[in-house]
Image (cartoon, rainbow, N blue to C red):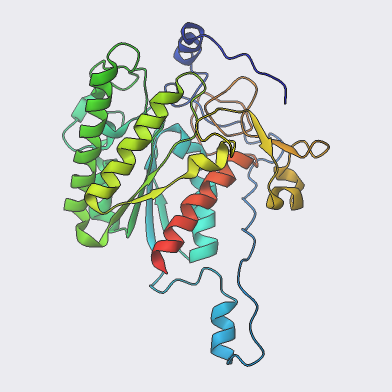
Amino acid sequence: MRKRNLWSAGVLAGLLLLGACGDPGSGDAAPADLPGAGDRAARPDPSGSPASPSATPRQRAARNAPDAPAKPAPKVLYLGDSLAMENQDVLGQQLKDRLGARYRSAPYSGTTLCDYLDGTGEDSLVPDKDKAAALVRAERPDYVVLQFWGNAWGYTPCMKGITYDQQRDKYFDRYAADARRLAAQIRGAGGERTRVVWVLQGPDAITPDRVRRVNAIYEAQARASGGLVADAGKAVAPGADRYTWVEKLPCTAYERQHPAYCTERSTGRTALHLDDDFLHFCLAPTTAKSRPCPVRSPGIRRMASVVTERVATDLR
């Protein structure tokens, strides 16, 4: 695969300030009239095992329903930053198709964990009505899925100017403290019925160790508070190295069977990112107004499938 020259940190920060990337900037999707706009993600491949000749009709029906939950259809709330903004429609469709889930999403681009905490007031990019605890009280979800890349450059006021580059230890301390507070507020609002699903992030092209440590915070918080971990980031990383960033990966079996998701069929590889956006997985340019990704994008589908499977596994 061809080598890719990454931007310098200084040039990248400048581009982000101009809104090139939706996490620290403002845009996440392309105009609705781009090719493929409005397409829904294709349904996942069935994975049920074949029924034996001696099975009863009820047993055969159960075996032919690969994701039939043992519990009633779950209610899922999805919160996060620009990654969640671009993913939200695909994840919602997969949860509905596979699990019959009731679903609501309320992502905000450029945010981090503190934006969803109660008590942040005007320092938050998330209005009070969409704070995590407020939505949990209103929706009574079974699962709250949290997907945050980690906003390392201080683009949200509630971080009080703490950035990864300038105050590395303080950044991680603050991030871990916010994870504890957010998990506690969600539990306080939803009780024991609500479980938090922490979505692990894919490789960071500029500072790979940062995402490794952010993911470790998510995993530790899940262990400490009875939450779940969905390693969606692994699905967009090369198998040989979980934290090595790549622009393209070999097509999966599903992607080969569905050409829209295998962007380079002649080489058997598919694009995860646009050439000029190392962070997002939507294969359409960013726009001034954040919204769900309007085109079929392999990286988004891969991550959504992992999150959906984690919820499905917990229900079994």
